[in-house]
Amino acid sequence: MKKEVFLAALLLFFISCKENKNKVAKEAGPTTELLQKGELKSPFFWNAANIYFLLTDRFNNGDTLNDINLNRTKETAVLRGFMGGDIQGITQKINDGYFTDLGINAIWFSPIVEQIHGTVDEGTGSTYGYHGYWAKDWTALDPNFGTKKELEILVKTAHKNGIRILMDIVLNHTGPVTDMDPVWPKEWVRTEPVCEFTDYESTTTCTLVKNLPDIITESDTAVELPDALLAKWKEEGRLSNELDELQVFFDRTKYPRAPRFYIIKWLTDYVNDLGIDGFRVDTAKHVDEKTWQELYSEASYAFNTWKRKHPEEVLDNNPFFMVGEVYGYGISSGREYDFGDKKVDYFGNGFQSLINFELKDDANRGYEAIFSKYSDLLFTELEGKSVVNYLASHDDNNPFDKERKNPFHAANVLLLTPGASQIYYGDESIRSLTIEGAQGDATLRSFMNWRELDSIPLNKKILGYWQKLGKFRNDHPAIGAGRHQRLSKSPYVFGRTFINGEFKDKVVVGLKLPKGKKSLWVKGFFGDGTKLHDAFSKTMVTVENGKVFLDNDFEIALLELAKN
Image 1 (cartoon, one colour):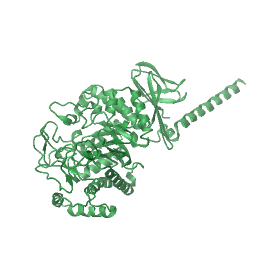
Image 2: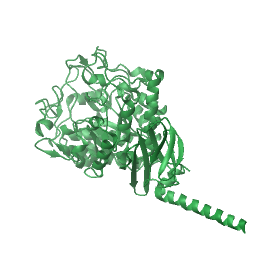
Image 3: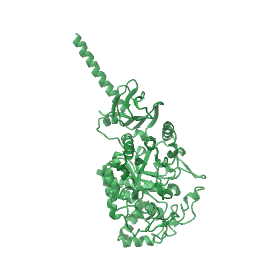
């Protein structure tokens, strides 16, 4: 009799365990159950992306043979000449696993089209177009950066590693005029007035700065190609091909041969030919907003065409992505940017996201104030859209923590704030942003500090911290795209939940935790008996009475459903 009672009790126990397991699986959602089993990787969502932004010339020198081209041998001011970084260098670091180890799922690199050949004296000494924002010919790559074949290899290598490519594009202006780079025809560009930024017109129909000819993007008047460009193409043996392609483009689209449509054609060729996943659009607010909708339409057409031709290389069903640099835009502005006399909704004109200039200031606030603010805005005013958050960049002279004194706090803020994140090269390795002798934005653009990563233990420790958070972010779209919920004030614990169709993702994060033994409140988020994994300490825990218990010296915990 006792034996029968024991067996019955044992059977009830196993039934209870199975029911609890099913309850946990149901709580997680069908797709998350597959994720737990290790049978599926988390899908990619642009509004949760972990983007790495680098200056092509300043990241990694993969080919020293292309360091000097086009007689660019003039001495320049500090950090204002070419330094050797190139497309091959980016590909090398993808193959090395550098981006994967950092949880990067999208790479944005500075423009790589052919730059002006000469130098400009900006009052700080001579400057070459090393940064990529001074286009001379949109149809060609600059030899200092590499070849189109090398770009093709870069894109394919990135895609094989689950990384998307964001191409930085400039449609607003040409490069400056130099002795080697004549001004484009007056039908193409205006050379005055200089923008005053007091209203819409004095921001859009003007030159951004002196000697930066502004493309007349608002015009629908047909124009002829510049003689200098035709002569260049002829010398390079591709005049006939370029003219034939333009004929096909304008026959298909019926656009007038206005300046902006030539450039839209040239830019979207890279999408059509290589499968570029998205554009980061420079100086977006200085161009009539309808232009961006036209660019997006043509880029989407090109992206879908490439997908049809290369079905085996398609990563997912995500549409073409465009993020705009509307300088000064902050997430608190919601859908519209205010010019004073006019408000513009760039999200309604081709952009899925805008760069958010606000986080670098918000970073000085408490975690909950930041996280709840961003979650609230993204699920109300910006529902269906997103922002790209950053703390440092190539042209923001007031970044957060310019002296690199708080790299762990910076990682927590940048990688855990709702929205997409943009790591600026060297954020993760405390690359110096204050270079002796460098003036203006040049001080933000030193070469990547690879040697310090190899030789300084603190840099390695900081990189390791960024890697753990970056990987967790990449594994869990809930971090960037999920709803935020504070679970405990002290110690500070929060949860994020993201649901998209059948996909469901839930995580819990603890910050400012005490060292040694600690408990984290997860009640109402994960049920008792749920097995969790702390991705930071690599510890397995089980929820008991609404809590999980850890015993380590870390001040952070990254809790995810344990894989079976």
